[in-house]
Length: 431
Image 1 (cartoon, rainbow, N blue to C red):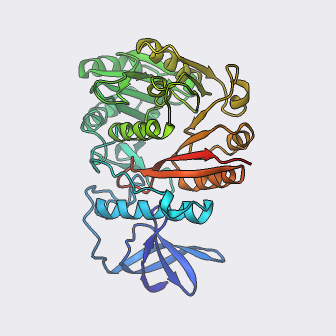
Image 2 (spheres, rainbow, N blue to C red):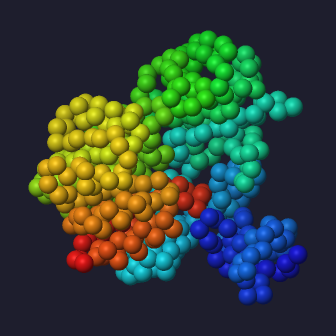
Image 3 (cartoon, rainbow, N blue to C red):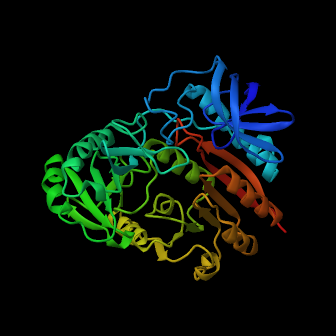
């Protein structure tokens, strides 16, 4: 047992950090200023991972969490911190990561763009399901496990998502085979339309579609079933597509289908798109390559400022949707390709070199793509990242390849969690 450990900071991942006998000690759900007693659960040469056993003296920064299962559910890490403090620590962690691991000058890192609302912002949620001995359970995995914590409402989900959760919690226990339901994905769009995907294991739906169709239809929820792999996704009732407005209520209207991707914070996605467009430096003469383009969240807004935009995404249904969105918004100077991002910068240069490359990779980053960008050397790169650690790794490689970081801005799409999105502009300075 570690006695009287004072927590003095927060780390990426959400844990509080103190020091004991020269080692950093990482403790979930602790707050800077806390005095705690904790039990080590894993010890390494330079750090210790521990669990809090007793809060001896609470930090003045602590606040009561809104969620009754906070600390048990693994979805949020920082509900016990006021949002102003969350923003401070996100800004500091992001800044420290880029200065220490990528050598970015502190003055190049802009202040965090805080969320307009730290609650009820999440437009897409995956609810895990399990038939337990004492009844049907629907909620989220406990941190570090596949144990499902039952939730009646989620305070970070949009009200429409919580309304759908209440319906499925009522419907599924009486369904033909509640024990087969693994997950329910619920999403709402910028127009208030709802869509749900019910996940079942291989072996058919066994009457689930017939049971749920009239219920979902009456509730106005577009319903889909996925039986096993993603390719089995099938419509039960309602419209296929949801729609987002990435440039504002009177701007572009972009559709995305079931199984497709859209940012979970619709308001902050608009801030993200605006930052990408502001940093792009487009004046109508440039060719743009958008890697990991999805259904055109960045490609189509940029098309109005560019000579040509080429979008690349390896999930073919998203490319089909991007092409559909271009047609529906009468955008003609875009081309979309269903292929991996790796190699695209060279193989899609048919109309000449690209002046700007935009990339929005998954959390694992884009190291292979970065190596290619070092070779083709576009004038500008706008890197949208959801992971500061892999961003720092990739930025370090790009700087070695002759680029300089002109600016980087963290954008908070995920209040109550440690996650941070960001937009970074790089300019080619020469080999």
